[in-house]
Length: 222
View 1 (spheres, rainbow, N blue to C red):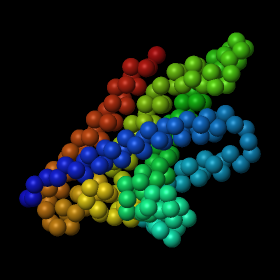
View 2 (view 1 turned 90 degrees about the vertical axis):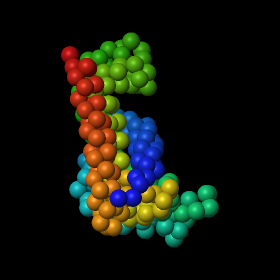
View 3 (view 1 turned 30 degrees about the vertical axis):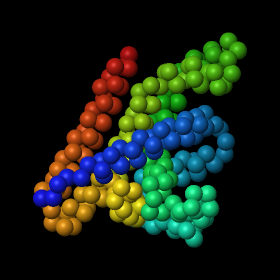
């Protein structure tokens, strides 16, 4: 067994944190729109958001790779801005994570928005509050369990993803080699002892992340 490299864990945690923060600010307006809007063809938006749940990671990763490489639309644009393509860089992992983890943030938020008593919202409007004031002072405080669920599930799913990460990011030490890739490397080289350690630590992180959801949500139960 070779010595365990903890850099993949730090990289995975960094990826999970950045993705979760960005998706929270993306998910709030998206969830609000889907929960309260009566626009036609809203189901199309819902289907697009849920698509990563049913697409094989290899399919999603393949098309993201085409989009993120130096000849792709986003990859070429990012290269002009930063000097390098999105694919095979940490920024590419973040961009891919925003897509494949999107439903894990948005779906709990939609449920949360729909669970808020409509009379509370109407009362806020009656008191002269704007929609933005109502959102921050009435709606969001009354959907804390859904917010916590979205945050934790997004984080847990991001740090555990393998297929999309491997195709979009490859296996670059210190740049895109997250813990799921480190496990794959260990298994491929028949270093099962290292694979056991990496896997056990990842299981522990995932378990305590999910446990946090149940503990915090129980505190908010009426």
